[in-house]
Image (cartoon, rainbow, N blue to C red):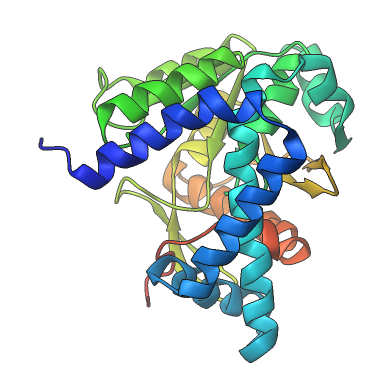
Length: 295
């Protein structure tokens, strides 16, 4: 597969970011990322217009109110990348201390009982930072990553996440046993963390999300149904200069029904929890792709 000049430029930019951003003052680089976000926002390219369309569906806002929300959304998105470049050099105890967690006992009590945990989260806040909080709290976990282009960027991003204590499996292009590996991890009482509101496989489950039909990955619900692991919704968000993280109670698996029916019910209940978290922090929801089927 050929690699475009744009892909190479993105990969080079990320490599430079991980090398240079930690060496510079935090306030200086933070201001630079804000300015870059504002410039992209003012350009109103396809990503910004898609973000606004998605946010409008979530919030009902239009006009200047929607534009202001999307500006904050772009700043939040660029803050994510700013923090990604700084996280590898940030002390683990600082990450844990600055993460304001609600419902963390749902994770720790479940693991203490010997059951595995599937943490499912939307693309909100800084999910890599939330993962660093979990590993810093003494619980390594397994996740799945989209295969980025070029391959060098995918490998660099994987190395970044592995450096934070995660086990990273490829969504595509691996050995083809991803779901089996995830099931094995939770059956042994471990933790799996999965993005769960945008399907990249074309084999997702149809759900109603903010009143419209979309497809979500089957993995989180399927793991809960097949293995008996606790499926816990996780909602990271930005909390001032720190981070917030809400861990909701377990999504129950229905007693009756076929496996397919149970997976569908669990997936719908999961996104209903996501709806509340996204509605509470819409500026931190980084969804710049088509999501609903009618789009």
